[in-house]
Image (tube, rainbow over all chains, first blue to last red; front, side):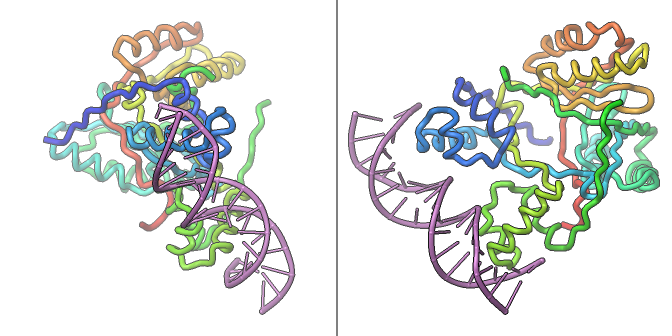
Length: 162
Length: 162
DNA sequence: CTTGAAATTGAAGCAGG
DNA sequence: CCTGCTTCAATTTCAAG
């Protein structure tokens, strides 16, 4: 049985939300700049940010990369449907798909499809090769459907307000 | 006519790739720690990182947030299909969908569907309300299909090697 | 493109309100 | 839960190889 980690929602006050909005937009904000913007002492601000990390609200920090600048200007969505839903097969396939080169995110979903893969490639041929070499190569895959991504926009997210 | 920004792929050497891998995993790595790991002088390392930002390879830095800890433990994919593809309608709908509260990312795709929305909500009822209030409320939307996300994994990405 | 050292700035620890 | 002060560490700058 795989682990299921329950996560209690943290109750966040207005200061927390403002910190999260600021750091989501620019994770390199210095503690000093952040404290000035919020009108807090630096030590208080550092305290709140550390608390958000300790509580698991902030899970990490990472740089955003430009896929086109890296040489991967083509993105696609690949819907994957299985012919069998034996757990061992599903788990193994999921792991293999997530580790395939070019996969940005792999979604295990309920409903018509079983997996959605968000991938980035350098050429149309590479997209075809990806599907053949990393998806349909698995016996348990019954059907795939590939949709080119015209454009991707980051949404408003879940943080309320502006 | 909307703007189309062409992006030239940057040619990255081995040092660049190692920097990108390190900062993608932990964007809070200090320049000092990064330079030590790569065996470079601090000033050299800072120079390379700044160059990657200036060239648009690194587009920013942001904290990763736990949606469950924020109180939004339910994620879903919503496939949206339109009845008309008039540009003005499509553009306006796209903007509205991306700005709807709870939307993580909005994909404009080619093929069977027109948009894929990755959303996070707090309850199943909120998911229903999202579809009714922010998606099907638009006249141009002909059909939607909502798929619950069991699990989401970050993929290997496009950076080669380990 | 890379470097080391100086000068500036930011982060962390802590006792107290 | 918040703060100011002190101490320590990191970033930036720059002339030069």
